[in-house]
Image (tube, rainbow, N blue to C red; front, side, top):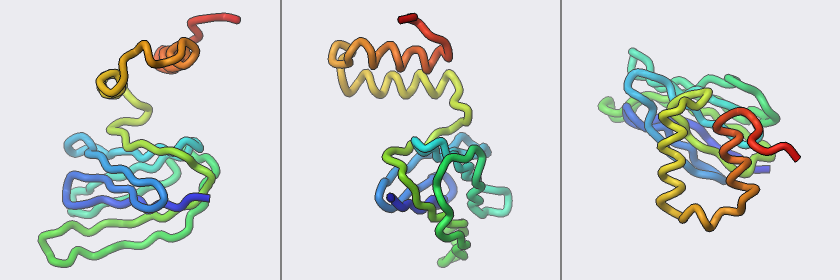
Length: 142
């Protein structure tokens, strides 16, 4: 079992700490999403009152809520945030700007992956699976 804590930081970052770590920025005045490989989705939003809110479940999988608490800003120039700690059998997570993930963000992720490794390093089956997931329909029938 892994354990993570999800929170907002300053006015423009979503931070995940614990056994897995990640951070990301939501779009301006929009929520961001922390998505676990278990199917759990958490919405993280900076509200008009200057407080980060963490909502769960947007979509539910198998994680368990361990602790939820609010952190008051101190010093005052920092933002207040809710912190949500969960545990479960997840192995990976990602911070997304949209949920379900929109085409623009999928293209950004694909470009990011392609910069790190040439396409010929990915096995054919893995490439087909990734493209099918993007298209939401099968490319090959076996």
